[in-house]
Amino acid sequence: MRKYSKWIFSGVIVILLAVIPQFFSIYYANFLVAFAIFSLYAVTLNLLLGYMGVLSFGHAMFFGVGAYSTALALTHIPGFPLLPAILIGGLAGGLLAFILSPLLVRVSGTAFAMLTLAFGQLIFVLALKYREVTGGEDGIGGYPLPPLNIPGVMSIDMTDQVNFYYFALVVITICLSILWFYTKTPFGSLVVGVRDNAMRLQYLGFNLPQTKAINLIVCGAFAGVAGAVNALLQKLVSTVGVLDINTSFLPIMMAYIGGTGNFFGPVIGSGVLYLLEDLVIRFTERIGLVNGVIFILVVTYLPLGLIGLFSMAKEKWFPKEKAS
Amino acid sequence: MNILETKGLYHDFKGLEVLFDVNLQVKEGERHAVIGPNGAGKTTLFNVITGTYSPSRGQVFFKGKEVTGSQPNEMARMGMGRSFQITSTFNRLTAFQNIRLAILSKRGIRFNLFRRVDKMQEITAETDEVLKRINLHQERDFPAAMLSYGKHRALEISLALAGDPDLIMLDEPTAGMSRDETHNAVELIRRLTEGKTVVIIEHDMDVVFSLADRITVLHYGEILATGPPVEIRQNQAVKDAYLGETEM
Image (cartoon, chains in turn cyan, yellow):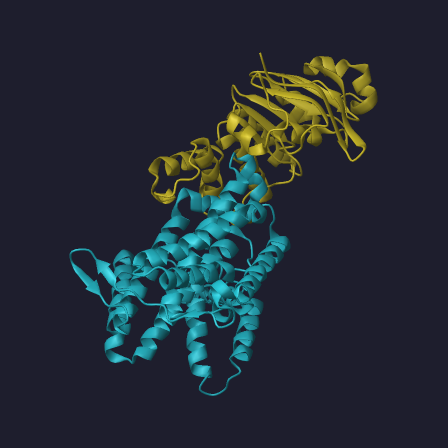
């Protein structure tokens, strides 16, 4: 029965997402895509924070490098196809994580947070100053949005925003599914072991730096994919919005608000922040104030986030039949 | 045959000499106890052998190969299991998940990204079997941090044993346990290490004399005596340094 309800639940969500562009304006469709992008981005942050136990203060560097790579590829290579454009963003994010991993895997706790902050800011400044390539503060814009070619079958125009909506949601869903599966693999259980007791993991015969590096690269790559899709959605990549410190902090807030202990926590957190922004912006521009208050309330009173609140309520009102 | 041997092992912490010329031989299949007063260097000796530190001088041989300065994970893969004096488990993971990590390591499953670990029947079965053997199957899905002290210690010891190592290094397995818990732990160790080589640090002399085939006495970083329990009991130097004159 439980199994069925899960399928029904997913089915309802898929149908809802499918009909949204038919009933709502394209503004809301794009809004949903942005939410999905940040969900994926926040999930990759949480694979470091909630799963491996390290807090990245510079996560925007992976997101931003992915976005810039996609934008640069589309700008400079005529006829660059769509899927490789996204792939190149993921590769760039993963490559950056790979390059930084020898340093990052040797530290944890505050040192890890500070080191990621430093590298994040370094790349932000690089993008800002290396104008010939990145366009500085203006960023890169006006690159073409290639169609999705399915060889021999059809070519789907991505400049049509409804088409892009479906395409982006499918890409993000596939990425989230891969990451979810990743957490369930034997390697995923090692990553959680790193969080709980890195030292003991070594005495069980696991190579700690290697384990941390692989997880870092996976997170970097998928954050890069999120950045790439973001570049396609915004059709503009500039330092503010993909590389600045706010872009690093946003997924941290999303993860904490939704709950770091659960895979889908950051998705909930991302949803809450996006909905809130849409509501609050109608009354005041002080969106940061509202976000900040909610963040403080959640970390103070709900250490497990909104997902934790949800499971607490579920246990209270629908206790499991047999207390284990 | 010596499964473990140290030759002229020295270790110092920034000038503070902790081990002097330690020559330890552990034969295959024996239960070897290392005893000595606090600060004698017992845990440091363990740390140097299992790869936490590199020794300042001297060599460590395991299964006839020199392993001086190897990393802890390399030692573990060669078949050396270790437990800790201060309980060191994966506290937010369940007892089951704790043991499963050891089983995964034993089977060499490290970077598998293509199967779900909870769908690996053999792994689950083997983990459950270990939990049953250590009498933790009822606490299977409890986070390690929520286990009672005795059970938590049992989990700590079992993490070292679950990987089926050839040499088991137990650092004060009964530390902080009550009389009953100690008794149970000793029984558990005796049962699980049947026919295996064990090196054990222990303060409880009852445990030492009932469990060990051979005893090494460490005193201020030096080996004072090595021999079977009867011999150690009679040894005048050991009595003076550690056991005292009162009959044990």
